[in-house]
Image (tube, rainbow, N blue to C red; front, side, top):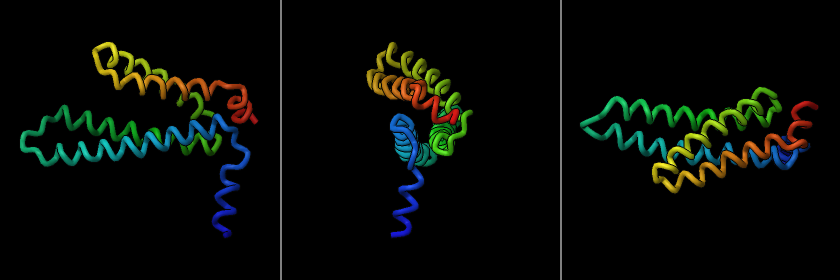
Length: 132
């Protein structure tokens, strides 16, 4: 019972848009780490390991960890995390747009997710919560 009470107070006072961003970042971090971890395991099992592929897989794992850190930093109300999340989401949306132009239609989902993060983070309630 005491643990449940502490969990409720951990998220109390956080506006809905911020909670949505935190959830998106944590979910994408978890899903990305599972996916990247599986890709890494497949990569290490292969005999013909390409170093560039290994580097890219490590970059994907780092990007997933960045999502987790951003989710935590936003939850802790660190203002730099808001700016970084907006900037990083815009860069990632642009990269996904390039992928969509080349024919990867699954990138449209990524574009939507990143733009949702940007919109939620620039809402007045989000700005007021970080400045307060």
